[in-house]
Image 1: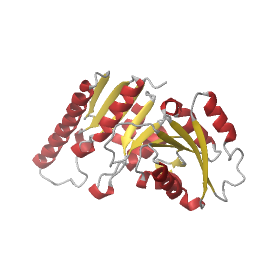
Image 2 (image 1 turned 90 degrees about the vertical axis):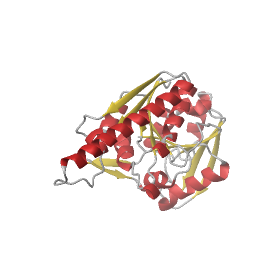
Image 3 (image 1 turned 45 degrees about the vertical axis):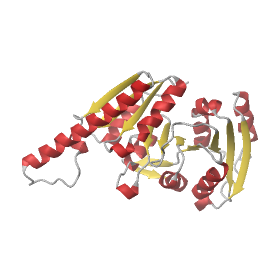
Image 4 (image 1 turned 180 degrees about the vertical axis):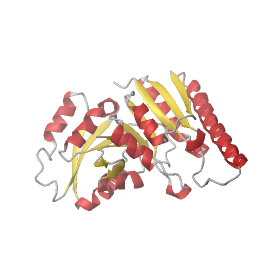
Length: 277
């Protein structure tokens, strides 16, 4: 069961839809929702270099805190309209990065929600997403920057390759799958996965069915290097409203290294992605 959720609120008002999506998830599960906004020195643009007049930096710091406070106010107003149990946290004092802080906070919640990067607007959420994926030990939902709708669970695609990461993601997403109209266990059949144990997914489909999930099975061929494109193309063709997948990659000396399919999905996704590892 999902009882509490944390969402990263961004300072740019154009990114408020991540809060709206989180509100709809919390409402669906009757869960407590915590919104976090990061201001302070970490919210000041990194082009401020030593040697600038102190008042310039102070003005930027003040603006960062004001923008973070405004983001929380908008979130709180939207949450109250839905009569949710909410909490707002303004982080302006920490010396750690927002990515490190948020991933640590997320360990104490059933689910975290963040928004995809938007390269066209120079908004980069990749470090926060990767840190939360690798370091929180909790599942997360990444919301596309183009997302305008609240959560819909008509058809959910679960990416299945027989791996432990895929099994973990599917298990963590069960609260969503039980609410979905249809859950599709989807396999990209490639040379790499051809001999994988349990690849056909029959046992996993039966497992989901025993949990009351309405499950179908589907598979398409694809090269190992093209898995992300096959998944996203199939999601578009069948009108999927969410993708569930394992997060592949590793953390090495504070450097996050994503697998190719994970990186491809995160860069070009058009529907929310539930991810776990």
